[in-house]
Length: 112
Length: 116
Image (spheres, chains in turn blue, yellow):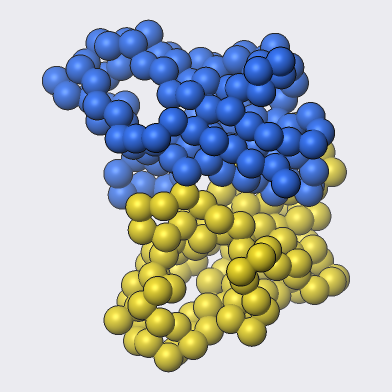
């Protein structure tokens, strides 16, 4: 069945460092891909999405490109801030009318 | 995209009791989904609720433990029955349908359940 594999955490970086969180997927069709963020004590927020191959999703300085050939959707940010400290989930939606399958999550901590 | 209201936002319950969580959507949607997020874990789909038919449960989840109602196209409830401390989690709902461009935008704010 469909699945998402993402980089194990926790990840700790210094402020202004470059961030990459790796995500790969397995799907039978042509899924939509998502990154969600969950800040401490808060609900789940959609960070960005891409619906077809070569699409680039972007938001708040974060980017991810839908790579069908490598079945990947890696999250990147050029310069992280302390406020980016959160848990990040990679996810996909394939068949199933909106059912979302989540990766295990990556906890990111940014130190000043 | 749809706006989802979920309640209660949190509750502390005694073991052996049941809690019903409500999910209200501001527009008609074909599918509603219920997820569980155990402490420090990712989200796992519990079931899919389609109006007018019985919910479809994922492996590891059963109707007796998590009965779901879907009386109309804007509302659903999830009941956590005969609770134990292992049921302490955040429960969230989401929506879907035939328009794939709307997938994934919105989740309810979640119900944080603690069973003591």
